Image 1 (tube, rainbow, N blue to C red):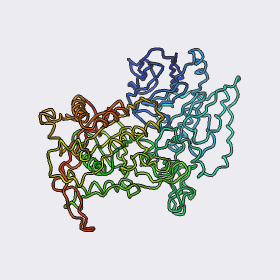
Image 2 (image 1 turned 120 degrees about the vertical axis):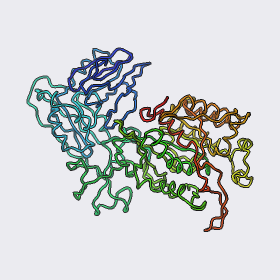
Image 3 (image 1 turned 180 degrees about the vertical axis):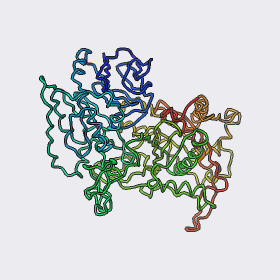
Image 4 (image 1 turned 45 degrees about the horizontal axis):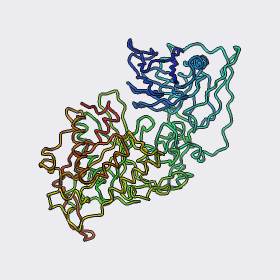
Length: 628
C-alpha cells in the first residue's frame, strides 16, 4: 500500500492523505488547505498504486513552468510552486508513522540556493533572507528546504510566496549545508537528513573548491536521459541547472566542441542584476545553449512548455508542402476560429521554413512556387554534436501558441521537415539519427500519399492530374515506413510487445482534392465529411465520426496502414487534408529545361490543414483548444 504526504512549506504543516482523490489549495471546498492565494491548485488522485497530479492552474516543478499532469514516482519528492504557495509532495510505501517522523525533520526556516557554475548549495537562510538575496540571483537558480528527501524548485516560485508575512525567526539550531552537488544533479538535490541534537549558533557553511574540470568537459557529466527539459535539436534531456550560456564578446569566438566558427559555450558563474550570464570578458549574454549538442535554445525555452509534433511520410509524399501550407493556414485559422495567437518563436531559426511558406503562397508562376525535395543532408539539416559525434539532424522550427487575454502561459510547438528517406528501414542509427524525434514526440502525424497507392488510385475519377499518369507513378513504400516507425519507437522506448503509446496519432490521407468527392457517392457513404469545429471548439463527436469513415475506407484499400498505426498508439484519428487544394500542373524548369510537376499558384486553396493539429492540441492542452 502506498501513501501520499503533503508538506506546506509556508506554514510547516503536513498532511497524510488517505482518500483516493483530494483537491488542494486555498478554498472552502479544498480537501487539503494550503497557504496560497484563493483557488484550487490541483487534484491528486491515487489509484492502482499510482498517484497523479492534475493541475488546475499553471505551476512550477523542477524549475520549469507547466500545465501538464504528471505521475509521482514512488519514493521521490517534488517541490511545487503554484498560486503564491509552495509545498512538498511525497509518495511512497513508507508507513504513515515513519514518514511523519521524516516530515518532523523538515525545516521551513532554513533554505538553500544553487545555480550552474556553483560547487555547493549556499545557506542556510530564512525565507526573508533568501527573498532578499533573490533580487541578485540568476533566474535559473534553484532552491530547496532543509530535510527534504528530494525536490527543488525554481527561484521564481519561491519569490512569489508572501514570505515576509509568513517568515519565521532564524533557526536556533545548526543546519548543516547539503552535500556538494554537481550541475547534472541539481534538479534533485541530496538534502541533509540529520538534525543536530542541541541548539548551537548558526555557522557559515564550508564552500568546497571547484572541481578540476574544464567547463567544456561538463557536457559528458550530464545524464541525457533524465531532466525536465528536452532539447528540440538533439532530443536529449537536461535540467535547468545544466544549461549553458553563449558568450557575447567578439573575442570569445570559438568553442571547444563546435569549432572556431561558433561562439564559446560556458556554464555561467556570474550574473548581472537582470539575471543575465556574464562571460569572461564582462559582456552580458542573452542566449542559452543545450549542454549536449550546444545548439542555441529558442527564446524563453526554460519558461515555456515544448510540444514536439513529428511528421512521418515516404519520400516525395508532400511533407514539405504540408508543413509550408500548415504554417500559413494556422496563423489565420488559429486567430479567427479559435482565439489563438500563432507566432514565430525563433525568426532566425525558422527563416527557411517561413521563406518556403511565403514563396508557396506569394508566387506568380509554378516555377516560383515549386518546392524542391528535402535532401537527406540539405539546407533544412544542420550538423549537431550528439553523444560524442557530429551528425546531421533536421532543424527544429519553433512556433509559440498562446491564448490572448488569458492567464495561460505560451506553449512552444516544434516541427521538422524530414527527408522521407530517414524513415526508411535501416536508416536510423546513432550515426544517422535524423528521425529519432518520433520517440519523444507529443503528437505524431503520418502523411499518406494516395497517388502512390494502386488501391487508392482506383477510386480517383479525376484523371487530368499528372501525378496519376503511369510514368509519374512511384514505388509505394508507405506500408514499410509505417512498420519501420512502429519498430523504431519500440526499440527507442524499450517497449514490450503489445505496449501502446497514448500519444495522439493523426493519420492524414493527403491530396483529398483528388478523392474526397468519392465519399459523397453511394460506394463512399453518400455524404461529405462533417465539420470538425464550431465557435472556436473542436467537435469531438464529428472528429470521431469522420475518423471512423476514413478508417473504414483505408481498411478497404490499405488496411496495413490502420493496423500498424493502431499498434503504435491507443489514440489514433484519421483526417482528410489537401496541401494545395487543387491538382498540380506540369511546367518546364527554365533553368534546367526539365519538365516538373508543381502547384498552380492561381488555384492554391488548402483544405482541412489545421484540423489534425488542433485535435492533437485539444487532447494535449485542453485549456488552449477547447472541445464541445
